[in-house]
Image 1 (cartoon, rainbow, N blue to C red):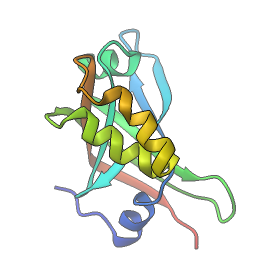
Image 2: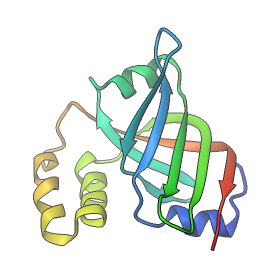
Image 3: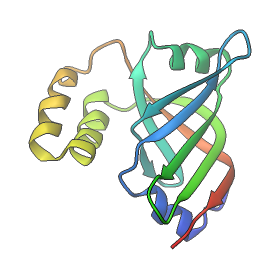
Length: 137
């Protein structure tokens, strides 16, 4: 497992929207904004099994995740690594992210749509093999 620098770990625990990069069957890059939870040196995310990002990851389970702060002082961390499905209750993952990103009440409301762990949802994690950081204080 890759050792993650403490500064990178602290940065990735902030509530920032990331951009997930995958590759489609034609070799074209697909970029999409995504919520994530950083936990134990892995980025956890969710999507629908029919989404382009999940179809791409089924074909090629490697991705990049760019997390950046777009106000001064500008900073970024880009993770490159292997992606795999994880067996987590979708509702629990969505709820934790929704409250983090939307706040308590709006987050609870958003997560209600996932209450019964819909069959189309999938939880996955990116385990970094390489990290590029540009952190400014």
